[in-house]
View 1 (cartoon, helix red, strand yellow):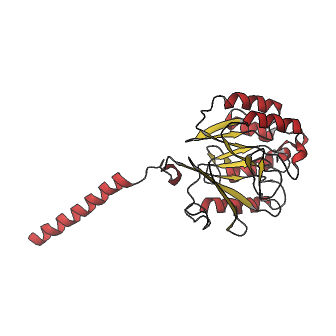
View 2 (cartoon, rainbow, N blue to C red):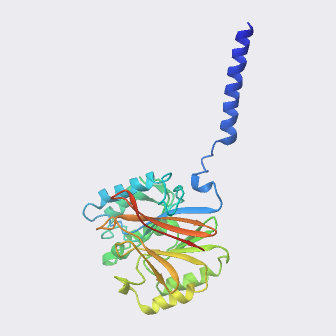
Length: 287
């Protein structure tokens, strides 16, 4: 009788402890790995998905698979640490090849947009590129406006303020940006993205005058990084003192996306090649 009582008591205590442990220590659905620390923001940046072009659906699925499986893997040895779950994915324009609705439907199936899911597991924050506006088409721009209400648009992740300037900072968007920046507290770190390159190949798609006005607008602001697409390559350069990152594309050779981690003191950007499943370039600086 004592033996039965002892076994019963042991099993009862074991299951009671297990239940309490689950209640006290398990993560809630809202507690993704990237949200457990208030001092870290992780997100991915891609561009030029060009759905509608030859083999683009296939290559975008490969990119998405790499994005979905990357959290938990090691960063390059020189960077250190583990990739956290991203808070979202920025896509810097040319979502489609021709701006057609059927191409946009494929994009939505694969990536989704904002809180509408696709095969990609994370929220998507896109802008348009010149291919999305071919022939004066507005289908892609209207879809983005439907989800984000305005274009350009902005949002905040913890202490990081992100700003989408769509295809490029034209005069109208620069006016919007000038007003918007006045509302951002000085301690918040600012990330800007759009489609066109600022310097280097294919950077002549917008004028020197607009670039000068853009610089004058963000000068002396806490802009820690600018991301763009358009030129399908991995690149990094300094422009007027700002760190600028050109991310790769499923179209042509540079099949990579950027993995960005920001803390209150550090910015790091690593390019992930999904054709070869390896890190191809990385950058780290104090901010």
